[in-house]
Image (cartoon, rainbow, N blue to C red; front, top):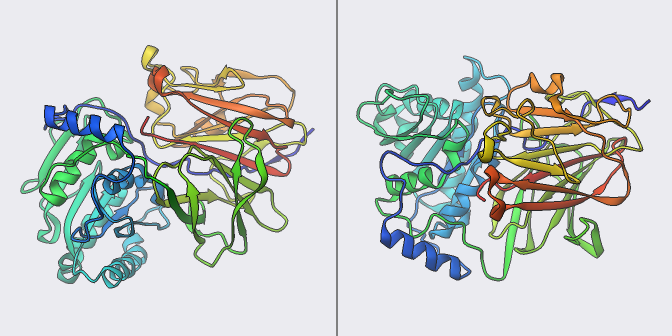
Length: 457
């Protein structure tokens, strides 16, 4: 009988993106439609990087991390924002308390000051999500000096303000759960049809943010593929505290997309991680598939698989953990079975009829209505042979995982061995946007496997 152990969750509580109509004009104008159609026909940024843009700093919410802003960051760079002026603030949001500002605010001070020094400007723009929005509002209200360093604040699904904090111009993005809420003196926009996670990375939210921060319309709301090589960088963090992973190395391999296995001589990056877990950049092919392997002495290797990146990305967060210290564990492990965690920055829906997501592993759909009801807001799906009995039951959730916020799981036997596992996502029932990742069937007694799908398809 394989022993039970905790299994690492990678990027399982990132908040989501979804399409939806905004009460202030989600539909495209004809000019916008023409520019978007043109953007799809060409590769590369729509304009040279504009150094007049203020630095943009994202503050995540509870149980989050900096990669929650990943797709929006690439929309901003597709519209001329310099990549080095977009950053994310990682902090321990595993248990926010009344004392959290005393710990978090000095850290936020340092990151803002670092951005100001690096760019030579006097102000930054902030975007806060949910609990991060509340923290940002309290931060600006805490002192005039802090407010003076911030030009704009965008609060997404979490405003506690009664007026713009510290007098900083404020845009509040509300979900349909808040039909009457508004902050006097701020811009207030609503997105009917979007769940909590969908607010952050929808194209409608992006358009409203861009208008508010720049006073202009975005050229496109698409993520435009860059020509030539791209730069990929990020951090390896112990989740959910978002602390550096300590003594570890990161190995980056280019893969054969047909099998998910490493190409001969496929090593593309090798990083000894510093205390904060930062790594990169490495020069990547935007059309290629990559594996990121986090190696720590005496612990299972943690493999992360992503779809091709398309654009330079500085917000990759490889969220790992040590056995016994993760959120949601209890996955059975053994040399004859493969365990998977599948994540996406958009809630998984299994009970929405034709609008449901389809997530298949070797052809078996694991998103039943019971496993992934819309109200669960699940962002990570844990897949393992619950009783180590070679028998699957994907119609019911795993209680130990379903009871935890933002994740779910089900009983699926995935044989390990010298073969590949095919994982496919059909988002919201849209066959034209089906995405596939193939990964080796690593034995789960010595390997952790996380697959991350895009949220913008």
